[in-house]
Length: 70
Image (cartoon, rainbow, N blue to C red):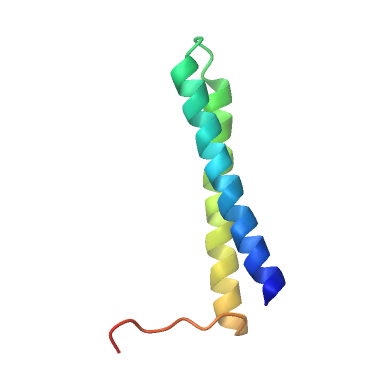
């Protein structure tokens, strides 16, 4: 369980770093948007990977979703 938690936290940190990189390339704006596009593409890919990992973990019983308000 601890390994899964570390993977999720690591993926979230990678998503935030990718978003920060895209923001940096947006604000410096030297006319080359390919670096920003690449950073945002990585962010989307990591987000989809994290979503799929959470669904897999819920189906395998590694995590147990709780019903808020039930």
